Length: 290
Image (cartoon, rainbow, N blue to C red):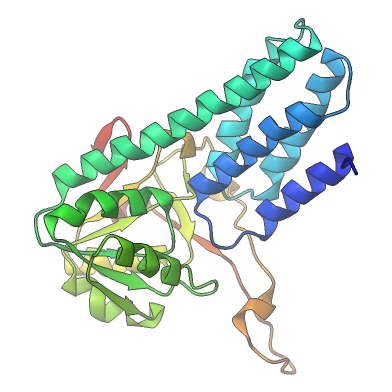
């Protein structure tokens, strides 16, 4: 049985909305893949209709996870390219839509490899490196650092416990790892030589939107004199300012707190770390110090 246009879009949107484990780069690529797949199965028979439907789906994907600039930027890049192809015949338009998505996906993957290369040059042999939450970019950095004998400190990153996924990947890379609760950061940040984190968005002033707890790590790092490096592809750059960001708040039931009278459970997933707490931003183009 063929799936309808709306069923397809809703299934892909819901998968992205409910994903609590993938990093922002992964979710951006999932959104782009959803658009590419939809361009091949959409039942619109004319190019203007196809384009309009693609643009509507793109807007819905951007609104699905508003804290993540990579979704916005990848989708916008894809949509802007397609607007120039409005006179193509439908079959040609579908082929262009797919190839454009594949090209952007390759650009994103190449960017991560370049970032890992820059990080290898930055981190010393046998360093202890702390990280928080799950970032596919940071994991690529750890994979590249494995040959330098680094050790890792990984936070559990509640709620969602993304740190467990990080630890499992580090096992694959044979990196010795200490797994800690978020509450132990004040104890373990001073024991590290460097901190590597990803980002969901880099704001116009260099502030970083990332999993809640990142700002606390940055404050502890500043106090202890430990460098904090933000590893993220340039697709995560946002034109938003600090006061324009919509930080996603998830269902409080994820915290596992029973219902208590007069108690409100808050579950804001992201926080904002100001640029003065960041040592350097590392993207595919190089290392940018504060």
